[in-house]
Image 1 (cartoon, rainbow, N blue to C red):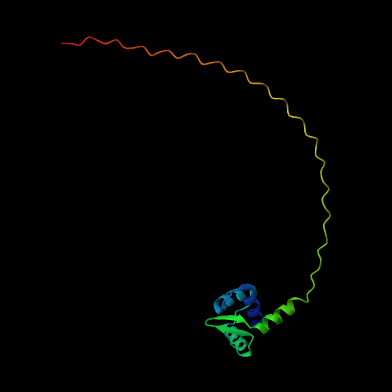
Image 2: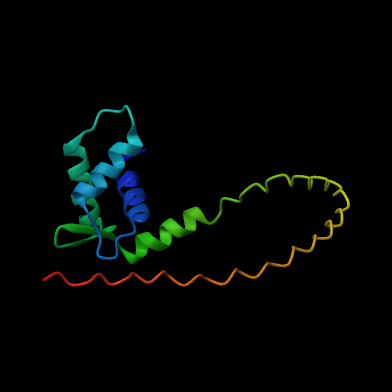
Length: 130
């Protein structure tokens, strides 16, 4: 993959509204390249050549795809027909066992009334000491 193609791919995948910075594009490309050696001079030249040819639009320190490059990228992506995945057969449904009726609940025993509370014993007053 050429650096220009990698830049186009990185910009489309990053989907930044205001454009992708050169650092973000570089990191994305390096992750995609894997073991290949990074050539920074070629990367920067590809960015400058893309701006000069009109494929990229430079906005401050970010790069966007030009409208012409966007339509070209969409046309390339559209013709590839996707192979339909073979449909899997639906798994046969397992027979569910008939549900057993719930056992009738036993009636709870009636509650006994609480015994009346005993009055607290009153203390006898002791005679005052003189």
